[in-house]
Image (cartoon, rainbow, N blue to C red; front, top):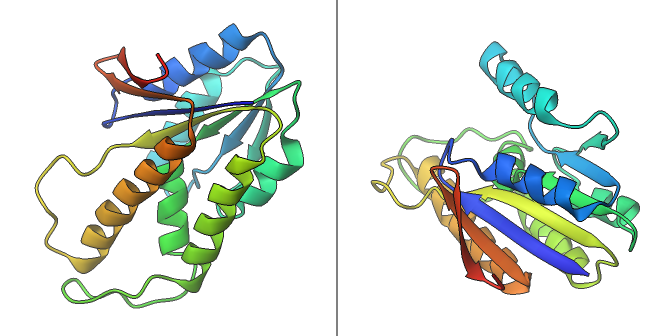
Length: 183
């Protein structure tokens, strides 16, 4: 079992680096996609990622039930490439009907705590290898709105919790990997 977290800023090359690791493993790859094509711009982003993937990779879309998908497809003989944790976090944030105020307190959706706990648990018992991609969103200005602050805070906490469970953690900037843990 090997768990790897690759994170960095937007357009840093983290997904391409994760794909290189997956190809280099020599194992069959199961690609877990968390993105949802809600508009034309996101459809374009998804299409870009799809064109880079080898045809023999199995792709599963899992916008919410990530832990369940990981448990179903993980085996000692394959590698799971999960792209991306912060999109999954966004999906959870909006998985239940809420009216989010621009300013004020936010109550996390019930689904969030359940799914986050399930994800962290499944990573403990994983029989195979997993490479997870995530965004670093907390290095800029603190957002003004409550929803944005919640997202930045929870993305940071999620990255920390995932990194603590991983044998390898890599930061990617300008397409260059910097190994922070397990080099």
